[in-house]
Length: 335
Image (tube, rainbow, N blue to C red; front, top):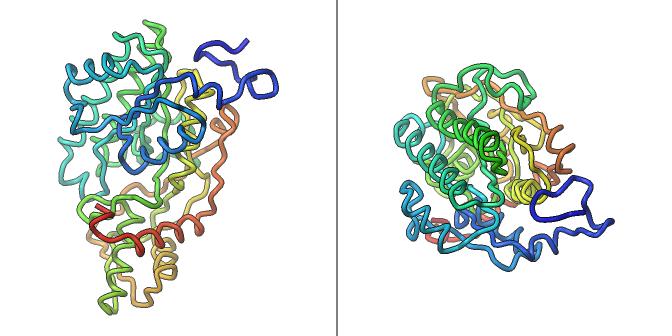
């Protein structure tokens, strides 16, 4: 019988349980719910019939402060929390703010897990990062390889801080029986992404470079590194689907990758974005700037097996939607 939140995998609409009825019974708090990924997760929850979705905003609750987190639990009384809030950025932002990225991500995660335990939260879903993997992890990255080395140096403080929360979730499950699960999404992209050059990731940074250069009539753009590293990307709507599926179906201590299982070189990515934006100028590479991790591509077998997740959006289609959104939405609205 399907009861409460500890749902066996065989529970589905064919034997009396359906995700719509499941979500109708939940009070869900989403940290980072007003952000890029969070906004799509909130939409996915509401589309599944969740009547009570509470978007946790930083101006209302400082998630670095345990008293504020305790107030959040006391006020909202969630049955599920999705912890998506994070301090993130590209290589430049990680190099400039390693201390901030470590402290704020670590303290948010540690205090949320502890306050969730004290509150007796039925289920906690923590969203980690692919930056937690060792620098030279063999491709495709399998979850069991997470501890086989140190993360790539430019984002190691961020990756280590987020990975520490996995340890905490597993320790709390072992000692307190806490149902906390941990997800490892690959690099995300899509509409509503962060296009601020000071803190954006590679896809929005390249889109902005190409669109701005086209509008100004520039004959070239300059990109960091050599263009040789590879990356895997997951469209944000697919990522939201994976997170919601995990919240519905997954109740085990092992982390789960969320990805598309496909990789592309940064050089090929830049050329594809240039084509989609209509920028026909030269793409120059500044090899004095870091490349970051040599390769990133996840094994998605566990997500397929445990929660039935497979990315659906073809990469070029997702890029085209992202470019169209950026070109149509006014700059003030993008912020």
